[in-house]
Image 1 (cartoon, rainbow, N blue to C red):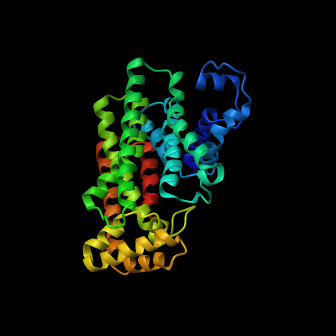
Image 2: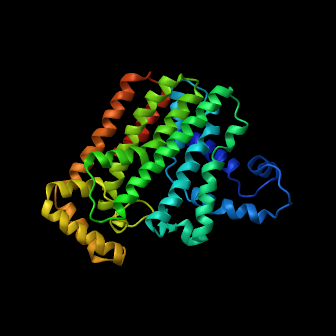
Length: 344
């Protein structure tokens, strides 16, 4: 981890630069252009604070770190990658705020969700703004106009993909009677989770000056990494609970994760009972006995272990491709370490 500390410090400095605790006239000018009035700092902090609060609560930072390491893997200068890390982490942060609103989640990273703490209207507006503010680093990013245009294209396409994935997820969790197919679920997480892993890899290779065909090929590999990561995260929600959230809250939110899908596939009769438990949990909340009953049913089957193995195989296959297709260097070793932690 010590080898990553300096990189993580640089990432934090970059995030603080573009989402500051205290606003300056230069930041205001770059973000908003010329204003008709000399506004109080409070107006700007009202839009910054809900999302900055969430950023400063922590998080794994594996996406911006993946961007930097991918640049180094491609023999690029990491100093070209750091300014691009807000595009990934700010987009991720904005999506979390929107997710929590859409899922009616009350907590995030061990504290009240942004819409609970700051109000629905303020949180929604702040997160929507952050999707656009994430592009601020490109204003002064030193590169050719063709590369800049390529970055805009990659960012906007992956953002559209992310929202399509979220739309699929919303459609399923808003209707307890729908259990998607395995292929539908994998497609959904390839969009919702895989898109930001894909973007991280693509921006890293872009910063290293790679050709677009190489950028897109590497992006596919990172998409698979993101899929594996999400599956294992879904398993953890049922077995141990995710960091900063409560065990089984995916059930309350109506999330049809891979363990649920596998269980329904293996137990058609049990699937009908699971649907009823999902409805009860959604109505009664995280303390509902339906949550533990649902977890117990799924855990007593092969579904959890099957999903865990499925996710691990995806990550392991991706690491093999990484090993075989790219030159050995320190960044490659660190990417391996980064994703091997997911397998533990």
